Amino acid sequence: MYSDKVMDHFTNPRNMGKMENPHGESQVGNPTCGDIMKIAIKVEDNRIKDIKFQTFGCGAAVATSSMITEMVKGKTLDEAMGISNKAVAEALDGLPPVKMHCSNLAAEALHKAIEDYKQRKKGKEEG
Amino acid sequence: MKRIYLDNGATTPTHPEALKAMEPLFTQKYGNPSSIHSFGQEAKVAVDSAREDVQKLINARSPEEIIFTSGGTEANNLAVIGAAMAGKKRGKHIITSKIEHHAVLHPCEYLEKELDFQVTYLPVDEKGRVHIDDFKGAIKEDTILASIMMANNEIGTLQPVKEFTVAARESDVVFHTDAVQVAGTMPLDVQELGVDMLSMSAHKFNGPNGVGALYLRKGVKVHPHMHGGGQENKLRGSTHNTPGIVGLGWVCRYARETMDEKVKHLEELRDMLIEGIEERIPETILNGPRRERLPGNVHFCFPYIEGEAILLNLDLKGIAASSGSACTSGSLAPSHVLLGIGRSHELAHGSLRLTLGIDNTQEDVEYVLQVLPEIVQKLRDMSPLYNK
Ligand code: FES
Image (cartoon, rainbow over all chains, first blue to last red; front, side, top):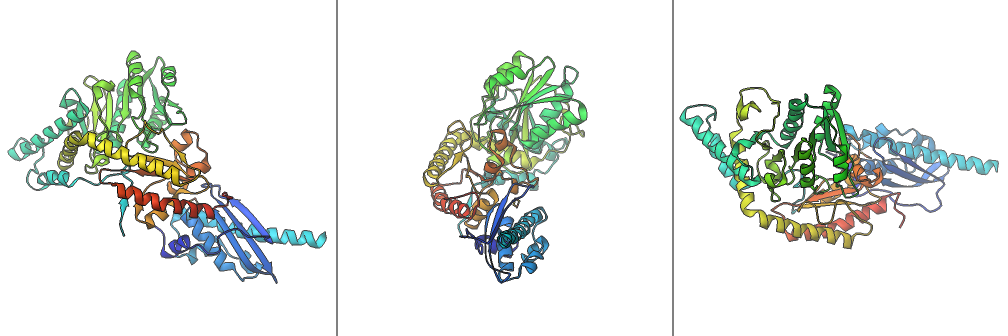
């Protein structure tokens, strides 16, 4: 059912866990099946220096969250914002059609974490 | 890697002896049982004798009360739609429960939508039981049919069917029970139960796929739903699946001979699994009753985690199981049975069903108890909902 890459990320998820004092974080839920994903980031020089995820979801949800963290680590915020759910699915050598919605969650969580970081930064600069 | 099959509620391996009994029907006794020549008559003898084996397993009064079908789903469709169509002049109200198999629920929904029947879907309690007062209260003037399963295929709950049949009989309501999970696995006596119709399927108790039967009490009227050559008392046109029918007959005989042992074996392993899981994994929720459940059924919810992820991890360890999680269903909706017993969407997510069969051993159970706690913990550590 799943590609080898999906199974690899599922069995050995990269960057999984909690983060102390994140610079930005998000939690998003999947309206389709009820899954939840959390992403936390640390940013330095406008680049994602560290990233961690937690997922309550299926194999595809775990694999896409793991994959996206690997893809964006070290990337600039703009580059990270440009990563789409389709790109994540492709990097995993594809997902079964019923599982495409799971990849939305990873991209959405990442983008929201970056937005959260920007909000916080703005708050600091203004305050 | 050692592989352990714990999805016997989905299907079971065909017993090698059943397969042996079936083989001559493919290669030697291949005649059509409806033909008058010797080839046909040999096949007919085999079909008739299988019919008696089914009759004896469920203690029907006569072999004519057994209608061979393509399986449990067809038996349920024939019973529900057939009895509804035959009774529609008397009334158009049907009673069933919220946690029936889709092979009963969807025919009911079809009758509601397309043919103006009214259907009452009875609620169940936290253990999955339908209450007799609810059942009695739902019977109306125009109720013609009730269909309540004997045992739930997901959470294993056994229903007090006898109580329902007494009430149904008093009100002239035809009573059907889906006994697909029970037939061949637990003792079954249709006369004692007082049911009018009962569905069963061969592949749930070590028979072949694609064959089952409907018990239809003499005198109960149903309309055929497969129109054709007049086989099976004109209720089910179609050339007999002779090898399948013979396979079903064989496992019925085998089940009758080994029933006590089988129940004891399954219950022992089941209780070992349930107790072992509760001992080794913190925060578990057993679904269904602890004792009044199918002898081979174990069903848990593990909070904070998701079922497909459990299944994938188990599969990597060679263990086959199933789940009622939204993520494992094609429809991406959680199991209606788990929602029916009041589990939240989130809890239904972390559900795991392990169903034992005759081939499972104590070592299998020990292996599961060794690997499952690690899997649950690993997934909990990954979960944003788990904060320990
Ligand atoms: S997250 Fe539910 S199906 Fe993938």
